[in-house]
Image (cartoon, rainbow, N blue to C red; front, top):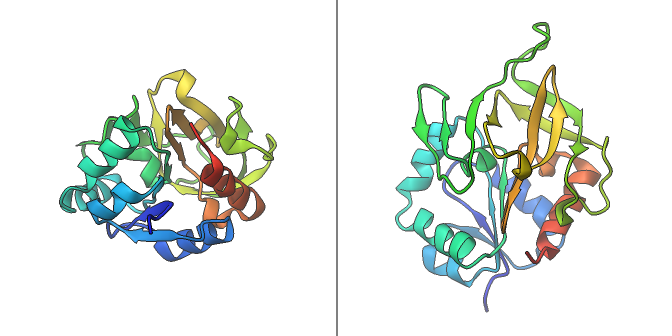
Length: 210
């Protein structure tokens, strides 16, 4: 029986918490893995990521056929894909953590270290912060601007097309909190740690039909 939702397991994500949150949000037939043949049967994809962007990209690309399968299903066939934290960062063109690396390039943008204008603010940006929703999107149905969500990151997406910024947060400077283009969306914050807002966002993604 085809799987509806695939949580991508490439060895670099908080899979247990993400899987639990997805199931709590309505993903009853969740596939957790990275087999390209199984991914073809899925209707939508969740790409998690924790740690350094370069390390996540290296592990993702080490899984034979995985990037090609995701590109075919999400970009060419238009199936919904959600990137979480570093999973969102991987969707843009390049990163500058520990040198430089080419990312997937599915949306315009770069990933650079956070530099708050208020130098007293520590980096990483860690903890609860208000979500400022800039563009109405099905991902945010039932979630209001100002609702707190949970962040843990030292790098953020910059230099992206302004129209792809769905939401931002302020941490001494505006930070991209959510990106979206076509069937691809990403959130810098952790829905699995964001309680009501996180579960609602995941439920919205599971129901989303681009």
